[in-house]
Image (cartoon, rainbow, N blue to C red; front, top):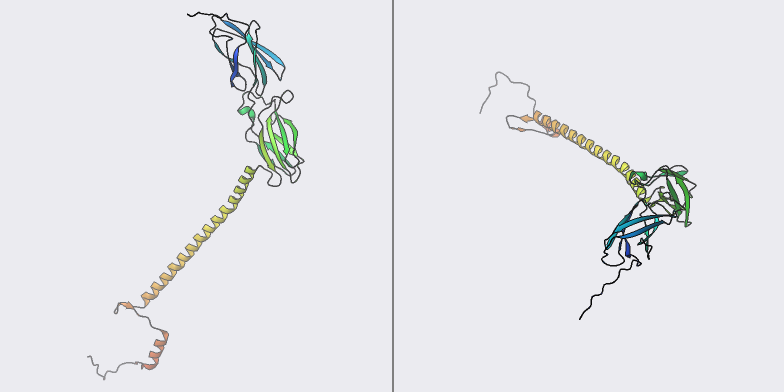
Length: 294
């Protein structure tokens, strides 16, 4: 035996399983299920979005018969905080959740230039990669002194640089630059951080290492070039001397070459002197002395 029971739909129940599917800078995708399975008619939902920073409310209406509902909330602000409430249009029980949108990204290429009595912070405009950022909003700069363990707010600017003075010798500082916070510092951009070592070169470690590498290269390259030039000149001088010695020896050997013997004849000065002393000097021949040819 069995019995079929059909439950009467209760429109006073709240939507089920309300959650966030995806959150961006200016939108959020939320999802929920109907109060009961397989609704047999269109259901009207009220989606209330409360801005917890600006203290404002917006209400959107969603009409559907689907058991699972997915809805995109648009026109949100980066870094905002929102309270979302979903309920049936007859003001039944509600389901709620909180959403935090993605903040603006950090400025790129933050660098430090050291001057005589101050430093300059430089960075790229955030408007180059963030369509939701207006330069009129500006940037705010913070400084952290690691020796004193103190964080200080230095100010804000609408430019892409900022001057920092009165730094203490022997202190290490960390600077952060971010899109200026709105409404009591509750809607801020992601910070870009850079370490400044006052004891070193006045730049971040990576920039300092780059500078040192450049300086070493500027010294080593000319020295190597001079060494190569010196070696080249030395080889040329040695080659010319070798050619001169070879030519001198060839000329000397040719002057002492005997075509009859087929070789060059060399004799020392002592041998020549001794032979001259012992051998009689030939003064001439007489006509009456016969020549004997053996």
